[in-house]
Each structure stands twice: as C-alpha cells, then as structure tokens.
Image (cartoon, rainbow, N blue to C red; front, side):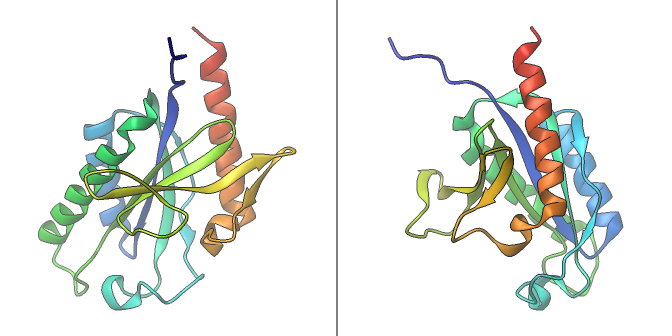
Length: 177
C-alpha cells in the first residue's frame, strides 16, 4: 500500500493595479476556497513591464494562504477556478485594460513552493486540464532558494518572509490534530 499524501497549504498570488479589484478577488476566493489563514502586504510590482500591455502600469501583488489544507492533486482544478474568477473580473470591472486581475495559485510544503501555470516549459510537469506545475522555490538550510527559472519577484526577500510564515503555519497544522 502506498503511503498517504500529506496535505499542502494552498496559496495564491493576486495581481492588479486596482485595489478594489484585489479586494473583490479576495472575497471571491474566500467564497470558493474558504477562510484566509495568512495575508501578505501588497507589494509594488517593479520587476518587469511584461504585464503593462494587458494589465497596465503600477501593479500591486499580494498573497493569500488558505486555512483548509488541500490534496496537492487539486492544484490543476484551483488554476481552472482562478481563471474563471479572472474572466469574471474582466466582465465586472469597467477598466481600460483587458485583464484587470491575474491570479496564480500554488501550494507550499515544508520543502517547496509549487505554482500552477497554463504555459508548458521544459521544467514543468503536466497535471491535467491544460495545467502544468513548477517548483518555483525550494527550502534548504533555513531559507527559501530560487531555481534558474524562478521569476525575479519570487526570489525577493519580502516574498520569502511571507512564505516562511506560510511554512511555519503549515508545520503548526501538521503538529495539531
């Protein structure tokens, strides 16, 4: 018999230039995935102009971690659900940009941060429903470490502090019945 898979901490990045869109998205995610356990500050996204054409300048990015631990096999479904919420935001908010919201779900274990994506690359593993997964960060010797493909913002110390808090929360959940 195979050993059971340990549940993981569901997280998501929320990305927009509009605070009201981020507030709305958080409420929609709570409705879909349950209460928030941890919330990061909203960081100014200054790492790239890649999103300017579709999302506009002066973007804000924050993270949520959810109370309910999940089976890691659910990641593809969470990415599909987040895509539906992004499309709902585009219909709901009358803004100049075609994409007012970007959601990037993933999960944290004691050893890694995994993100879901719709883009295939050599280092990504296909899950299902057109969704791939990548290990974006790994935890070693008391700190989060980047991979060669890690997006620069995910390598920042400010993000890492939130991910440490997430890892500590998860470890506490593992210890408590």
